Length: 306
Image 1 (cartoon, rainbow, N blue to C red):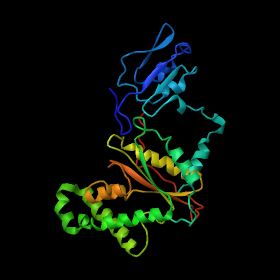
Image 2: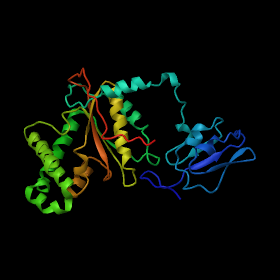
Image 3: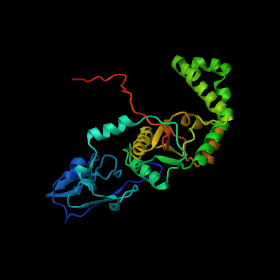
Image 4: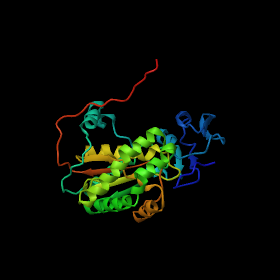
């Protein structure tokens, strides 16, 4: 049995070189699929895994003698690399300082984001944890002002055709089916959002992507864990901040382009391969403004059970 993704439908293959194995048992300890056991002080396959190798690579990464190789599910021994020394990693305070310095930036200079910086953002985002490997997160990259603005214009043209969806008469009709909370969200947020997007674009003002020089859309396939695109987008946002860019998550695009024939045509125009349960745009650019103070944020609740 193999867990399918849009990239593969088969299990990974596990190869063991018993001449290298020292019987330490670390692979047994980290494999949650129960693929390994120790027999006569050497590792062997159990033949009775829980679901079949998904290619997480834990066993290959932890083996001190390189006795295990995994291939398949977009993974091979060539993907192994030596972890950096702990001394070169960010401390908690360094990480906190970076996170606390970040604010949502919507005002950008005309300076473009070069390809090297883009590649660094994508590389950092690709390290994000995923539900089931290989990652089923897909990226649409709009890498200059012209491409980003063209998408915003096309999106607003699409929204113009959707205005009936938030008209007073339609909201009145579907109110019994939406429930109080969803009806309030449609009336007090989604309807004004569409009006702001389309009305401003008619005046030449882009409130969709704020004239950013770079926008990346993170989305999934029908197989994707819904959290995966959001986590990858968050990693990209933090990476952008570390590179001196301003960033902002844009949540008002993804929900509109999932359903209906017009939404499908817009997705096809931009090579968006799948509808996605969750997705997120992140915009990047060099900030035109600089903040000298941050604002402390809190969770709705933190319940620690002792």
